[in-house]
Length: 318
Image (cartoon, rainbow, N blue to C red; front, side, top):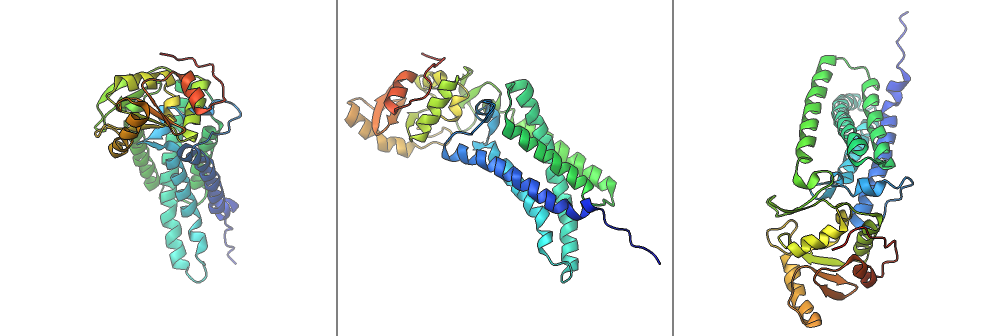
C-alpha cells in the first residue's frame, strides 16, 4: 500500500499567514496615510517619525508614499485569501487555477515590496540618519511576505521563478531610482517649480521641531497660504519653515501653470482680501481663522494669529 505524502504545515497555512501579515501591513500604512491626508500627528515613541514621514522620500507624485504601501498590502491580502473563499470540493478546478495564478502574483509583488523597502531602509539609515518604527515594521512585513511566498508552496519551475524575480527586481530598482531622481524628491531639499517640472527655487534649510509643529497646527485649523511658485517672497516664507515642515504647510498655488494650481480660488478670495486689508491681493497672503494677513509673516506672528500653543524655539527666521 502506497502512503500519500503528507502536505507540510507551512503549505497548508501559508495563505492565512500571508493574509494576516498583509493585513497588519495595511493597518500600519493606512494609519500613516490617514494622518497625512486628513491631518494629525503620527504617534512615535522614538521621535524620528516626523523627520522620516515629512521628508521628500515620503511623498510620491504628490501623494503620501504610505498610500501606495497600503494598496500593495491590500492587494497581497486579497490575492492570498481569495482562493480560500472557493470551496475546493465543489470548484476544485477554479480553486486550483486561482492558487496557481495568485502565487505568481504574490511572488512578484512581494519581491518588489522587499526591494523597495530595502532601499527605504538604506535611506533612513544613511541619508536621514534616524529611526522610524513604522517604516521598520513595514520592511519586516515585506520580508516576511517574500519568505512565505517562497516556502509557502512547492514550486515546480524554479527557472521561471528566477526569471520573474530578475525582471521584477530590475523594474523595481529602475522605477525607484527614476522616481527619486526628481528635484522634489532629493533628500534634504524641497524644489519649488511649475507643473512642467521647471524649478525656480530650492529650499535646503532644515526644520526644527517647532517649525514642524507649527505647520501641522496651521494645517489642522485649515489655514491657507496663497502663493505662486515664481514668487520670491513666497520662497522666503517657505524657507523659514524648512524642508521637513513644508510637507505639512497648507499653501494654495495661484499660478495657473503651477502644481495643483487653484487660480479660481485665488480670484475668488482676492476682493475679500482687498476689502479687509485695504491692500491689493498679492503673494504671499495668509488666511488664518477667518482673517487675512498680507506679505511675509514671521513664524512667531503666525503662531500668535493661529492660537498655536506648541514649542516656539524656532530655529529659522528672515
